[in-house]
Image 1 (cartoon, one colour):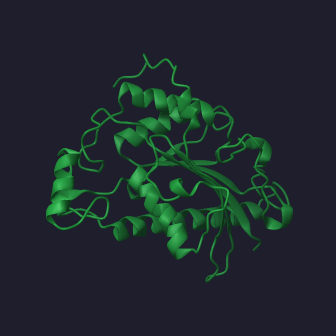
Image 2 (image 1 turned 180 degrees about the vertical axis):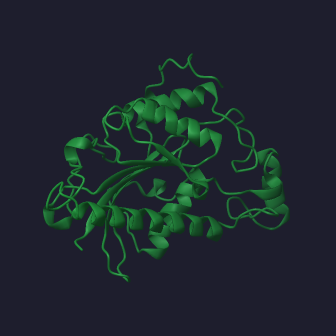
Image 3 (image 1 turned 120 degrees about the vertical axis):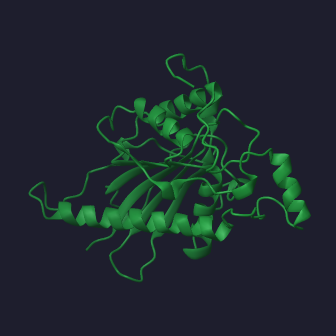
Length: 276
């Protein structure tokens, strides 16, 4: 089977109603008015991108972000959002529902500091990274299986989805110059274009999995300060992944941007039709 290429757009959820509680799973807050405005801005930014699949955390702030983004997206109007518990934010155990200052005090008392501290009944960073690895491997296998199935249909010899650069917004890192894509021997036809709406700490550990386990190296032009920082609300990270069917082969990863959020300069969206 030939190599298969896919785009992954990772997007953090917009801000929830209560900004003073630690992020997590136990307190499932909806988006604030500002949150809906930021989600609208992200939706406009991604409005011309053709997605073949959309995934979201099942927590309400991520659900509302994903729905708002897709309501702005005409090329993907018939694509359903798949909600997956593996995309939830890190679980903070007994610290959830309490002020952030209290979690910092808990960490200090334990001789540790945030974000490395794990509250009682919370998830360790390694456990979060393991969830990210499980979901990423699921995505790669899904694309391989779907591409193989399409290759045996009468739709065409290659059976590929035909996602080309014309279906995608050019992504760059703090520059107006378009990005040049190079993979699969110069073939820019993609098998999948995926939107994944999740959470800041989860995204950070997903990218850390790329670095630690898959030996991914950031391109030198990316700002070093933002590589492994927690994404801002609706920050977007964009990767091109090339996968093969060999058992021991590692996916090849090309990073287009990390935690991009310049779309937040435009927050004049009308959010009166949303219930917060």
